[in-house]
Amino acid sequence: MPSGLFHGITTNPILAERAGLFYPSINWPSIMAVADELNVKEFHVQVPRCDETAISFAEQRKDDAEKCDFKFVIKVPLTKEGLRLVPEMKRMGLSILMTACYHSKQYITADAIEAEYIAPYYGRMEESGLDAFQHLCQMKDFATYSTNGCKILVASIRSVEQMTTLAAQGHSYFTIAPRIAEELIKNELTTKAVGEFNEASSKVEI
Image: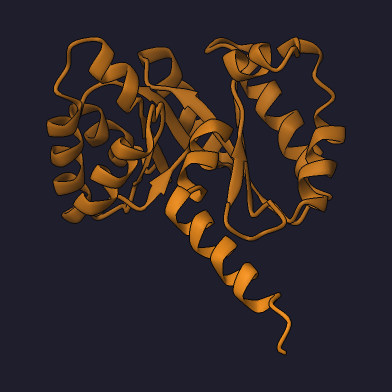
């Protein structure tokens, strides 16, 4: 994060579980403080469930983020129950990301309720037998004509190749795992060239 290459951090119950954390007992103020120290520009937190507890959870996380310089975004699943939560969250002044998107039509819904982001699960869509690329193409077209400006934050990226294909199509926002970040930065030929530069610059003139 301090390199400036990455813009923000995203969270959800599954990512937390993989990191060995129990979502209901996460110390959010502590984690947000670390993120703030790392110069994170946005911090995204998903509601644990789409029921009456979601509003109070979102309000508590909003309060936790007040002392930080980053922009706080609350993530809500694209279900009927999730959509019903959005008006109250918007009245609280929260930025909204609609998550768990599996179909281009869901962009229309997210844009209509003026969500700031929608997160299509690209890798999971492909693994479910869907034409993920076509859905993302349609979503990109929808975004071009959107009056509310809902941004497409592509999630569930499985490889750098998927990311570059979508970037070439015009997608600008991605959430990626550390493994993909490493692949994005690494290049064997670049490493070899740098080694040659270092070798040439360290030779002693006779």
